[in-house]
Length: 215
Ligand SMILES: C[S@@+](CC[C@H](N)C(=O)[O-])C[C@H]1O[C@@H](n2cnc3c(N)ncnc32)[C@H](O)[C@@H]1O
Image 1 (cartoon, rainbow, N blue to C red):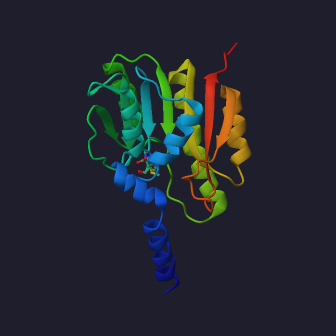
Image 2 (cartoon, helix red, strand yellow):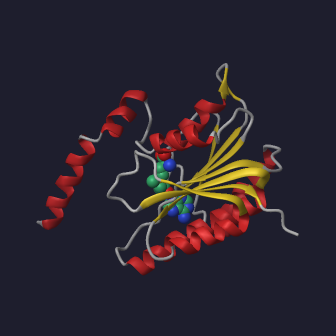
Image 3 (cartoon, rainbow, N blue to C red):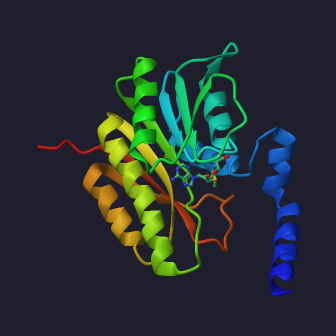
């Protein structure tokens, strides 16, 4: 009963959500598109010619936004490689890998795809990966921290010196540790809470810019 009530409240909030309506009007697969759009407008992250890796890409609205920014005369100027546990409806010009990013074999597949495309280094890594949450805060924070850490490790190895990593994370215990790990890797680290990220949600985005030179 309580669960039903909660579901109804969620459905009503979703139906009345202005970003859900905007996403439908503008042909985006998810309201999440507006989170990336806002951060990109502020930070000027996506530019033609870039190679972008989109982790946790399904249903695909971030890849749609990235593609729009790279497309010129109907063709992508640059590369987008998207990856998710769940299938994603194809997006023209976007390379998709189905798999769990925590698995070595999936990481290898991503690296092979980049190599096949002739990519040596990546300009931008996006991670909107959201692990399934149990409701137990300590366990959930550990899962969130883990996906952030592996996105960070991938970025440390694959980003160009001027590159950037944008990840979804959540405020709570462990958040400051994630920020600390970012500060060890990036020259500049900023926290962003775009308007489309629901106020009630602890979700927040962390952006790392420019790799620190390892001496
Ligand atoms: C909030 S959704 C992403 C929405 C997407 N950015 C968009 O704009 O359409 C989070 C996604 O992360 C994926 N995900 C969570 N953990 C993952 C993992 N370990 N490896 C790959 N994908 C993962 C989920 O399957 C889910 O599709």
